[in-house]
Amino acid sequence: MSAEPDTGLEAQIAQWRTYMLRRRGMHDADVDELEDHLRGRIADLAGTGLRDDEAFLIAVKRMGGLDELSREFAREHSDRLWKQLVLTSGPDAGDTSRRRELLAMVVCAAAGAIAVKVPSWAGLGIADDADFYARNAGLLALAPLAAYFAWRRRIGAKVIGLLALLFAVGAVAANAYPLADDAQSTVLTAIHLPLALWLVVGVAYAGGEWRSERRRMDFIRFSGEWFIYFVLIALGGGVLTAFTIGTFEAIGLDASTFIAEWLLPCGAAAAIVVAAWLVEAKQSVIENMAPVLTRVFTPLFAATLLAVLVAIVWTSNGIDVERDVLILFNLLLVVVLGLLLYSISARDPAAGPGVFDWLQLALVVSALLIDVMVLLAVTGRISEWGFSPNKSAALGENVVLFVNLAWSAWLFLGLSRGRMRFARMERWQTDYVVVYAAWAWAVVLVFPPLFGFA
Figure: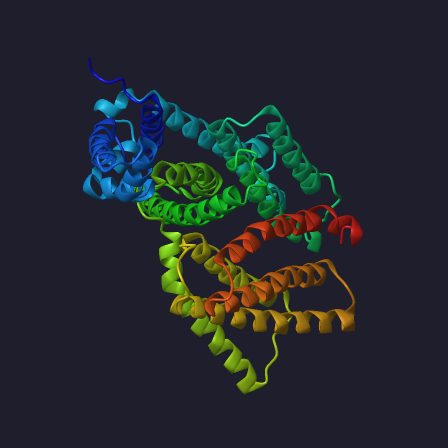
């Protein structure tokens, strides 16, 4: 009589199969093949006297991590990635789950495209009411993206209610305040509301688990990948626009109105959702691009910032505090922060200190020194002319960045010297996302009434 199968081992293998099948580079046949290898290894290890559960753990470890295995299969079958991103007539065409995901993306992208046109149907033209669209761009474009993730993550009614409430608060701040078109508060709302709502989208992306450090880091990774995909789509849209203009001109028609009022706004709104879908679709199949670009641009930006510091010292020229200059320097600091975040997201927590850690330390210290100079310039301007919405926002943003950069520099110094665990750096950056959200909402909700809607 044959021996009964070990139900505990079979349950572990079944769970392992479930995890493997979630990887987008894997098909049933691939997992069947890997399971044969896994069972063979378990049998060999059990023959040496190990218990089945011990043999299972060791066999899985020796076969490699799930991400490593799925990437290996993706390299061997790279054509599968693209077959997963479109509907095909092959065996995958019957995959109802992927069809539902594609349909949900199309519906949400279409909703975004329609949303940006709804105000024009109420008499608010894109050209004539540019300030209205600037204030409401984040609301119109990001609500469909939040809805897409709410559907994809199957989040509960309480989280959906929270998301709706936050978007409603943003709508009130953008439209209920008596802001003049040329008011400083209007510009600040147009800049900060999309950032605040992007972090609301992060709550939907995390499936409501925003308190989880791992889920916050996942959203940081997603944000970098989304930005790259959106830029690539935008470049393609630029080529499409050029061809549209050229072909219409060839037949004696002016397509500028169609492009300005339909193609560009609707295409951009739809691309926000499409880019998110592409990031999700290729997740864990091919290598993420943001960390790779970080490796390339970190030394370049470090050298650039050092050159700026040397030039400031050499010429004794201070930093101008005009709004455009402040925006430029703040964007530079944000780019540095992005490079820092995505290098952290791709770093092996168990890896020891290396040359790249010292490069990042140089980048952070250089950015910190420039931030100090900006802070000195802004505080000097405030002491001379008093507070205004723009100067107050610049002061607060640079204080927020200063705190992050200063503590990051300290953590990187300890990490580079091998005296600090990498987990502290990761925890600091994921926890600090809440500070960015709080500041963005403060600028949108508090600054207009605080400064008399100036």
